[in-house]
Amino acid sequence: MSLRLATFNVENLMNRFDYSGYRNQLNEDRALALFEIRSEAEYRLLEQARAIAHADDMRQLTALAIAETRADIICLQEVDNIEALKAFEYGYLFKMVGQGYQHKYTTSGNDSRGIDVAVMMRAETAHGQPIEFVRMTSHAHVTFEQFGLHTPELAALGQEPFERIFRRDCLEIDVKIGGKPLTIYSVHFKSMGSPRNGLNGRDATMPIRIAEAKAVRRIIEDRFGKDHVGERRWVICGDMNDYRERVVIGGDAYQGYSFTPVQETTSCLDVFLADGFAENVVERRPEMERWTLYHTRGPLERHLCQLDYILLSPALAKANGQAVPDIVRRGQPWRTIFPPGQEVERYPRAGWDRPKASDHCPVAVTLDIT
Image (tube, rainbow, N blue to C red):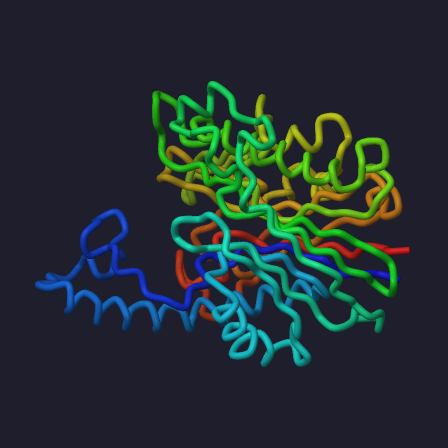
C-alpha cells in the first residue's frame, strides 16, 4: 500500500490584517509606500483592500500547487490558525481536488507573528486505504534547559536557558495507513534573518536551528528508543530554513547565467543526516535539481537551495529505496531563475514576484507503507 506525502510552506496563510507597516517602514507593503497616507485609519482601509485583492490571486496559485502534489497527507508551514486553513481548503483547494482534505490539525506555536505548522489529510489514500488519525502532540513548550541544549553561542544571541527551543513547534502526528503506524514530525525552523554580530544571517542564527534539530532528534529518540529508532516508521517534514548545498547564480539574462554548486561546511541538517539517523530523499535527485527556493538580495546575491525537506527514518528509506520525490515549481514567480532544461510552464496569472503560490516549492513523495 502506498501513501503520497508532501510538505509546503504556503507563505502567510492569514485570516487577519497586519497594520504594523504604518509605524514600521520595514513592514510596509511596497504598493502602499507609493502613496501619501495621512492617518492610520486611512492606512488600515487601504491595507485591507490591498491584502484581500492580493490574497485571492495568491491563494488560487497556492491551491494549484497543492493540487499538483496529489498528496494524501500534506504538512504546511506559515498557517495562521485552523479557521484560516479551513477557509482556504474549502474556498480554494476543495474546488480543485474534489473530496479535499477533510481532516486538519494545528496548534498555537511560539512564532511572534502567529504563523504555525499544520497537517491536512484525506480520509483515505488515492488507492482506498483508510488514513486513521491516532493522536497529535505539541512540543512547543520544550525549553533549552529541559533538553540540556543551552550553549554559549545561544547565550551570545540573547537566548536564555528557560526560553523555548522551537520558533514555531515540532508537531507530532500519529496516523495509521491501512492499519500500519506512521509518525509525522511537522516543523518550521528559525528563519535566517538579517546579518548581525559581523555574521551573515544564516551563520548568525545557526545555533538556534541546530538546537531545534537536536531537540527534534531527542523527541524521536525518546519516543522510539535509541536502539530501535532506525527500525520504526517516522518522517520529518517541513521548512528547515537551512541547506547543505546551494547553486550560486552568476551572469545575467543578456550575457547568460552561470550555475555553480557550492557545498556548505556547516548546516543544522547535519544533526539528522551526518550519521545516518535519517535520509533526505531529495538528495536522490541530481545535484542541480534539488532546490526548492530561489533566494536573491539583488544581482550580487542569488542562489537556489533546498529549504523544504522530507526526511525518512532508516526503515522507511530502505523500504522505499527507489522513491524519488517530485518538486512542484509551476507556482514560482517569473523572477525565479531556472537552470537550463528545468524551465516549467507557470500557472496562469503568476507574476514577476507576485502573485505566486509561495516563495517555496512543494515537495512530494510516494511511500510504500507495508
